[in-house]
Length: 97
Image 1 (cartoon, rainbow, N blue to C red):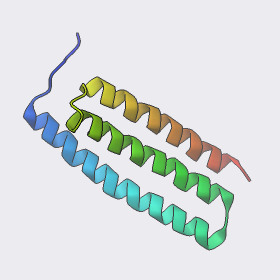
Image 2 (image 1 turned 90 degrees about the vertical axis):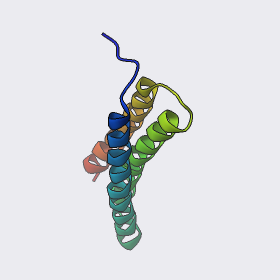
Image 3 (image 1 turned 135 degrees about the vertical axis):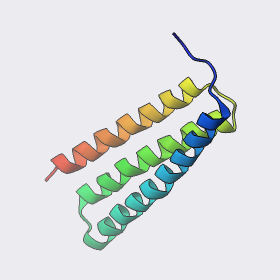
Image 4 (image 1 turned 90 degrees about the horizontal axis):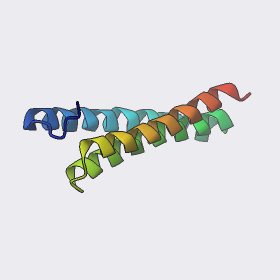
């Protein structure tokens, strides 16, 4: 069964959670980038890039759903692609020496 609509309560809850993810994820990205600038460690640069991709995915998913009036499924797909790319980058950053 495919659901094509969501209630206004769910939309509001999604907006609140996405905003919190944006704030916390942005903070983690900033801290990782600051650590990279302080140490010059390549893995920290990749770590901050990975978190940045995840945060951008959350931001784009919200923009596409709320501002561009695209379906929720498309927003989730966009976010999922960015989360996958971000997690892959984070995994690689933890793997390199």
